[in-house]
Length: 187
Image (cartoon, rainbow, N blue to C red):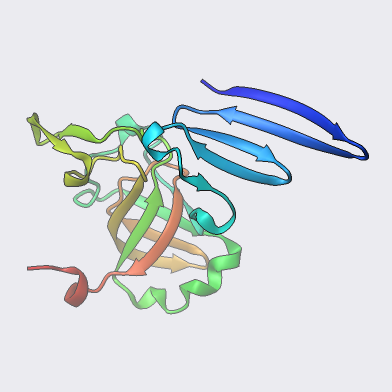
C-alpha cells in the first residue's frame, strides 16, 4: 500500500512542500528541497538515507530477451541456447572498446520483478530444505542483482549478441565484465 500525504506550509515569502510516501519497509519524504528515505523497521530506524549515503546504480543498457514473463524463463539459462541482445546506452558505448575479442562475459542485471523481502526459501532442486537466501540463487533477495556468464556471439555497434542468460525482456543491465577462466573459475 502506498499512502501519499501532501502538506504545504507558508513561511513569510517561502512555501515548503512536504511529501511523504509510506511504503512497506520505508517512508520516502521530501522536505526542504531534499529526499530522505527512512526505515520503518524499528531496529533500523536510526538509519536515514540522504545525499551521498545511498547507492546510486546507473543503467548501462537493457536486455532484449525471448522471455517476456518469469514463467517463461528457466531457473538457469547457462545451459540453454536461446539468443539475447544486450543494448548498451549511447553514453556507455565507448566502454565496449575491444569487447569483441572476448568469448564470454559476466553480465550483472537488475531483477525488477523479484520480491525483496524474502530471506529464506526452498530451491527447485531441493524443495524439502529451507535455506537462507544467500545460500541460494533465487531471484528473490534484498538486492535483486543477477549474475550470468554468457557466450558472446558478436558485437554490432552497441548491441551485444549473447547466449546463456535467463533475463526477462527489458531487464536493466547494471554492469558487464570480461570472464577470465584463470580468475573466475575456482577448482
